[in-house]
Length: 147
Image (cartoon, rainbow, N blue to C red):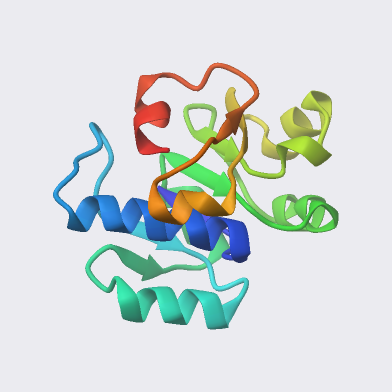
């Protein structure tokens, strides 16, 4: 799993996932090491300090090429600029945290040739593995368990 953009929401999700790994929970098919970009270096560096066994900083290009699951968690106006220099794969799963601000057509264009784009709207309570996570299309069992 790789996360492009470590702002407030993705930080909450990452903390919740890391807490689950530390507590001994497992997520089928997902390695415990999650790659994060340094969009917000303060958030990324603090998370690396808190969860050094679970997180590692990589470049956006490394995340797009190495990861089978890619989380897009940047501001809506940054998506096009972020994606124009990245190459996604057809077999990747894109977890689109910007889903409420992008049409399906835009998402397909930005994340092409990836075929599985999961529209997700997580909430800050994800940090504590509580509360709802709005999923706007069918993510599949692995993604549901991850969230």
